[in-house]
Image 1 (cartoon, rainbow, N blue to C red):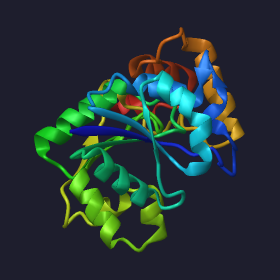
Image 2 (cartoon, rainbow, N blue to C red):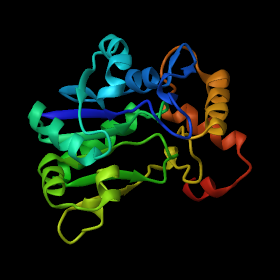
Image 3 (cartoon, helix red, strand yellow):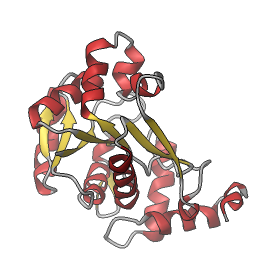
Image 4 (cartoon, rainbow, N blue to C red):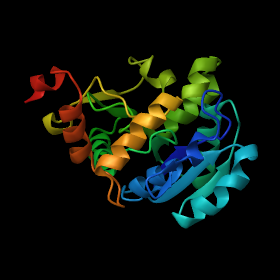
Length: 231
């Protein structure tokens, strides 16, 4: 079974409550959930903490996501606990500060991961904030048992890709049509929010912004030629 686990908390220090900020006709976290509902998964769950769960409950139910409450600071443990609770063998890891996450890219990297029987898979060269990570559930459980590092516990995947001799790590170059490596559309600061709001003002029409349209917009609106290498 494959679980799509979307991690989110509402107590961000740099931009508090960013997951509930309005974006297009929805909130930030709803944009992510709507896009991710197109992914080939068996379980859809918001992984959050006890202080955020009540505010997310209505929205998660609207988009068919279950709420899973886990450790607030040790996100690796939160994932491990969710793996055991939902009995999944593969994890699609997404984060709530990426409203422009691509369901298309998620399905592509999931297929690649399954074909390779990898422990970790992710695209390189795509705009930061549009991708997901695919993780072997047993590898995550092992990481949770053995890691004592705060960074690894906070970011879930580093335990695996810091130990490439122990795990099969697949960093997959982006297909040319999605290549845009120096751009970021992740939401961390107020400046990021205004940038992403502008993107939604320009090209959002009530449905998830597809990765092709986003990359085309970024290439037109950024003063850089780095993407030409892929063309």
